[in-house]
Image 1 (cartoon, helix red, strand yellow):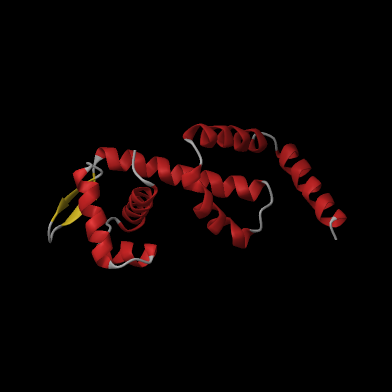
Image 2 (cartoon, one colour):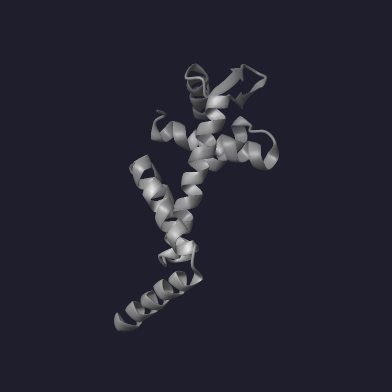
Amino acid sequence: MPTPSMEDYIEQIYNLIETKGYARVTDIAEALLVHPSSVTKMVQKLDKDNYVNYEKYRGFVLTDKGNKVGERLVFRHDLLEEFLEIIGVDEEKIYDDVEGIEHHLSWNAIDRIADLVDYFKADEKRLKELADMQKQDETANK
């Protein structure tokens, strides 16, 4: 299993490849707010662990293993954003909250959250009832 730091890099590489068609060290460094030399070291580690194929001065691509992990990490991130939105977390707080919790949940917990999200999405009435309860709580807390 990749470490939380490795996960951040794999997720970022996956997202860049999905949106731009490639991932460069400078793009990753900018997105993760780290130095390019740190990215290079991590990419070398990811290469050693078979998440990317890295060739010095030529770049890197995700391996099948890296691609599968990246896809799962993006799923986790998107799911947690959706879950926090459903339960009424303020939109401007969602991204930071997801970044704070995504590495601390087991995949079993992620799967259960996915079940809960599916439950609410299966019936618009459930979403409305939850939103109405949240409004009642906000009104009572004022």
